[in-house]
Image (cartoon, rainbow, N blue to C red; front, side, top):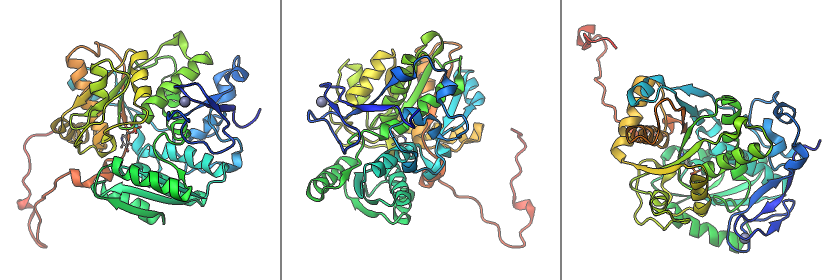
Length: 412
Ligand SMILES: *Cc1c(COP(=O)(O)O)cnc(C)c1O
Ligand SMILES: [Zn+2]
């Protein structure tokens, strides 16, 4: 068997097909391209004959990933993140079977490493020497570090307001870092020009077809980890929506391979912030595309995307799985962010906190039913956003006595 069963690229809008062995970005019709595999050649095989179970990272799924030659794999050990029971929060919000898939544990501190690992590997396979991308921070951090490992020169443009730590991650990688006084959409316009003028590879969200393939491995892992007890609901903090599109693609592929028992499909939920909720608005209006969200704002920076190029794919995944889209308030994000650390010991990112806040609301209004199994994706490390936590601890002087410590009479 070859290393990858990749067959070609296809446009989900106009159905044009493209060759994956040469550089392709968007379809001529403007739509993102998706990777197709020769699933027929794998049909009849058992899951564990196709998955390389000796590998404890996302490359265990190499047969369903786009890199043709194993020599081109650029890896820092990304993937195979744990599923953690969140029983304390679960008890509080009435979802005893509440779990978190913790993507904070991948290299570079966010699940963007999955997309970067596969995207950069394929870029290397295609002979790319220079790439450019706009980012809200985490993607730039991941792509610049993986590019460094691959020997690819990267140009990264991010909003001045992006989490400062991601700026440092990009800087330490030796990438060409630029800040923009504006949003990711403004950074995107500048990258667009750079790509046009310099002939750089455009690594913007969904403008290259392979990032989604890396992110879809979250779906494979969920299916593998839950095995026969497929979750009822999966909540995903949605910006560009690549992760959600990817999880849906993963489910469809395994379904086609006959690897999902009872053919059960989880309901997918796109979680956004009230300050930037174009997908939620479109879903509420049963639209198939979203409208640019003016003056977007949220502390959950990874989901501050006013208009996603793959919005129609996100919405399709929601409709096809009987899922929904929901927006949460900044207050709730902050409250849940703190609470998750205080009652679960999990220091998660604000985007992840948004999914727990959304789960509480959906349980309250009955959309999540009693006894259902629910998974929230925590897409990054809490320690990437230190500025979200305000601290003002008392300072002791040398020689101070312990009588200065206010001992609580209430035990946890
Ligand atoms: C990028 C990002 C998201 C949103 O991911 P998409 O797949 O683009 O929707 C969510 N959380 C974090 C921490 C991110 O960095
Ligand atoms: Zn097309």
